[in-house]
Image 1 (tube, rainbow, N blue to C red):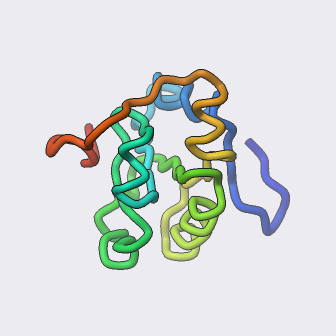
Image 2 (cartoon, rainbow, N blue to C red):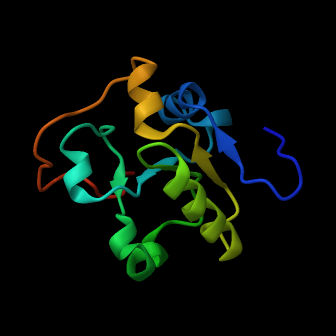
Image 3 (spheres, helix red, strand yellow):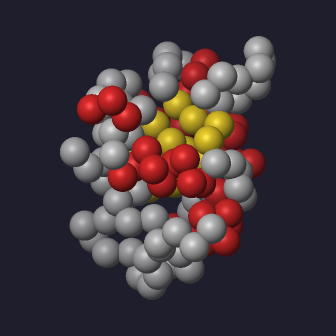
Amino acid sequence: MTQPAGSIPAVDVAEASARLDAAPGGGAAPVLVDVREPNELVAARVDGAAHYPMSVFAQRFTELPKDRPLLVICASGGRSAAVTSFLLRNGWTDVHNVDGGITAWQRAGLPVKRGPVGPDEGGIGG
């Protein structure tokens, strides 16, 4: 996807879902990074997303892999756009904002989990 100079790389929810379902060209599977706060995840979250809340992001972002594509999501796309820009300025090269966030994800009828977040959720899967 080509982006105008100075813009933040982004994908829509359909593209994000497709990328998560099958690594493009047999490459490394992308990581969906959800930057919403823990209380927001109870209402709806994408199964398999890595949870890196904005409130602790500055302390934890170095845990994110640089050798896998990152798709960053929040509620509507604002916080995730800021995080995408931040990561690109700090050495990550394959990062995209998920336009519309979890709100657009749900509107598109894509699957979500609801309820309390389990202790085994939120890590970076392989």
